Image (tube, rainbow, N blue to C red):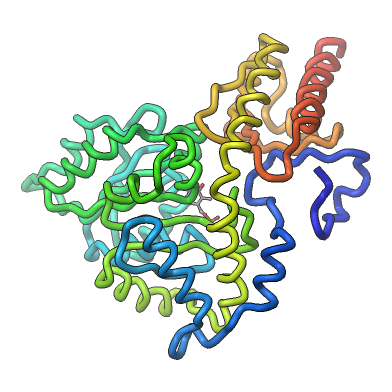
Length: 359
Ligand SMILES: *Cc1c(COP(=O)(O)O)cnc(C)c1O
């Protein structure tokens, strides 16, 4: 929908725009702008910023942790968790399609670590392979951290079952290894399970949470963990250049996001399911995943067009999506996607398919 406070003029040529690229495209609400204008601010690099401190405490409480650390991005939150928990020349063990592996593993170069992927299903690591990966061996360097991800981005927004999280944590505790949850979309997972976020947070020593995806804050993420781990992360945040000054302006939007946006995430999940159903109603060769949350994966492999060709063709109809490999598109629902956007997107898919058949 085009109800953005400030519309991106690069897309002005489209009479109608449905942006399914990511939930990161969500704009701040009016209430966020108001909170930003009125936020008490200090200096987060000196003795702290009152709005940042408030946000850090609120997220820590929500995730059942002692302390929080406000950072510009969830990528930095994850890297700081890695740095806080590990020593150089250790391994970080994580699911093979995890965002921390596929997209963020360059961090291993900075941290002097080896990232070890473990195959899984729907984002959940195979427990036998995980046990093998963390078992000590004379020829192995030690494991410093195990990471999980929920909801799982590359697994189409899949939500890890609670008993899986509990099993991974138990296995890690037996091995004396801390666990981190990449919870960029943790609130989506909690909403899908119908449980408080702390019920997920209890299965790890640290959790990251992105405020600028479905929660609609303009920027920012929070890392939550023990006071001790956060003190280490705070020192590394300075090293990485992630310490900001009057960051309370952004944190105030984050607080508003946390308190008002979590409750509406199920709406995004309903819309994702509706999109999946209507694309599957078009039928073969299109096949859409049945989403747990707000991400729909659309298989286009049998259409004779690549995912990049699909992205271009759909964008001609004012429907923005992203390729995921050569044979799949990724569509993400969010606060700006309405029922008629689902119809618009479905119509565009049908037309592109038809034009392809006629060609
Ligand atoms: C988006 C995402 C991140 C990174 O978040 P940024 O705030 O964009 O740095 C990390 N993990 C997962 C699972 C994500 O989806």
